[in-house]
Image (tube, rainbow, N blue to C red; front, top):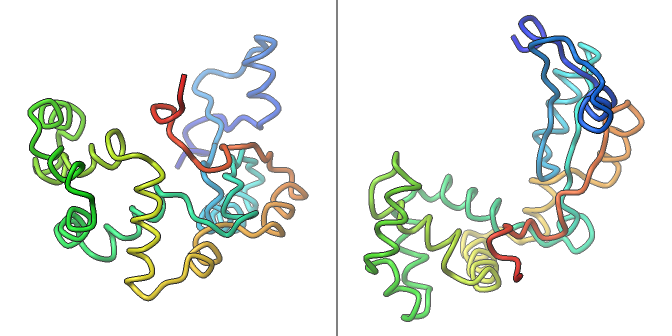
Length: 193
């Protein structure tokens, strides 16, 4: 649908547009993919390559170098496989009490309601805790333990979830661009000034 309705710019054309103000046809798009997930590799091979469309793949390096998954993908997978209520109940039970209490804080409630307008209030507050309140290192530790509790090793999770080094090389050989998406996928809001 995208290639039928838009001009799909190459990564080089997008760079020329951004850096040198070179023109692109109106209604242009460039396809980018974040995190370096196996699903994205499969999309490139099955959807993009047959159409000669090149994308930019921004890969997070820690799953490749340390076989340690990003907290984001772990929590997404856990929420999807457990269901949001089971996930939130287990997470809240595992959190130290100082962080459990934050879910009832009026400021947290108000902020969560502004951001997570499509979620039920308690689910929105849990998401807000994960993304903005609970220290990243603690969320990483808890989500890793929750994977183990589900019978999944982090190494196996990384192998199933993220591209391999060979997948990344193959995309590059096929003309796709590879970029960095950080080492740990730490949200900007979590990076100290």
